[in-house]
Amino acid sequence: MNRLLEKLTTKLVKKPKLIFLIDSIGAFLTALLLFVILKNLTYYFGMPKTNITLLSSLAACFCLYSAICFLFLKGKWKLFIKIISFANLLYCLLTLGFLFVNYNQITNLDLTYFLLEIVIICTIVYIELTVWSRI
Image (cartoon, rainbow, N blue to C red; front, side, top):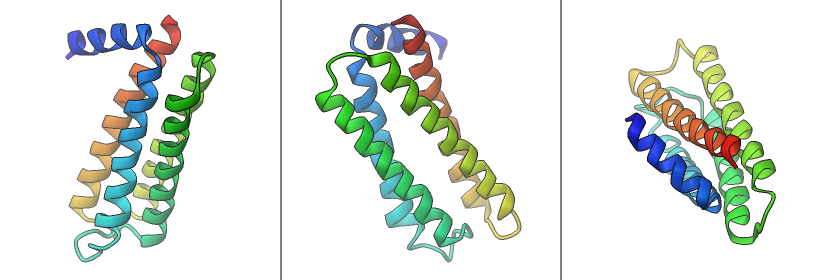
């Protein structure tokens, strides 16, 4: 796993623009899963719809931000990488907060989905910050 992350970060240091493409695709998938699937399957998921709506809206904003950076950014990668990586970390903290606040009503499926999402996002943040430090 470390070798894979090392290879990926080495490639992304050479082409930091790709970080924004990866982040945009991930945020799009998150927004899609939350808004379309989880919000409409409340029988299986106990997370309140308002929380899911907020999380999916944030993911859509991150998708837009990263897509704009990917398409139009020509330099100053470090600043914009740092912004999206910290935004992703805040998203994870908010998600954890929602899990704790709503613990009595969430299902095992909720817990599995959101914890897996947090692990994936934190891995992306690790990669982003590693690239950020090497640029």
